[in-house]
Length: 155
Image 1 (tube, rainbow, N blue to C red):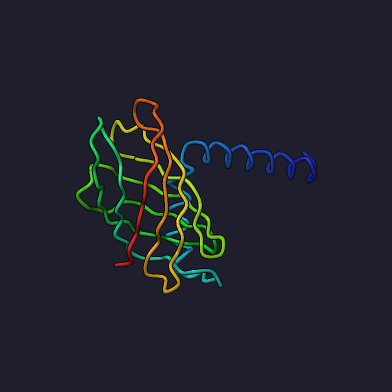
Image 2: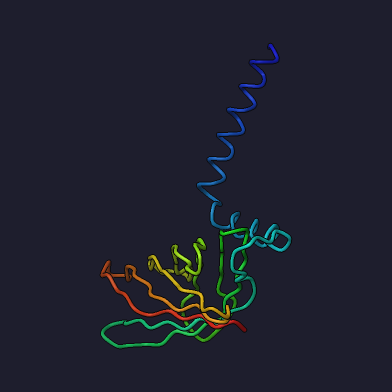
C-alpha cells in the first residue's frame, strides 16, 4: 500500500471513529474536555468557571415550583459546560452554552432518570460577574412547551 493511500485510509478511519464517538459520547466528552482544558485556557471573555447556585421557576401538573440546585461550570474560551452537582431539585441539568459579550446562549437538558425535558436558554451576566439572569424555554414530558426564569448566583 502506498504512503498516500495509507494516509487517506488513516484519515478516513479517524473521521469515522470521531463521528461514532461524537454520536455516543459527545456531551460527556465535551464536558470532560472543558473540565480538563478549561482549567488552563483563559481568554478575554467573562470567567464563569466554578460553582453556582441555580434557581429556576417551572410548572408541573398545573402547580408552580421553584427548583434549586448547585451547578459546576467549566469553560474553554467562549464554550461553557455546566452540570448539576447537588441541591434539592429533582432535576439534574446539563447546560451547553456560548458566551457572546455579556450573554450566554445555549441548550439545557434534564439528565435525571426517565426525564424528557430539553430546551434553550439565554442568560445575561451581571457587570460584576456574580449573577447570570435569564429565561429558559423547553419541552415538558408531555411535549408541552414551557418558559420561565432562570437565575444563577456565584458561590
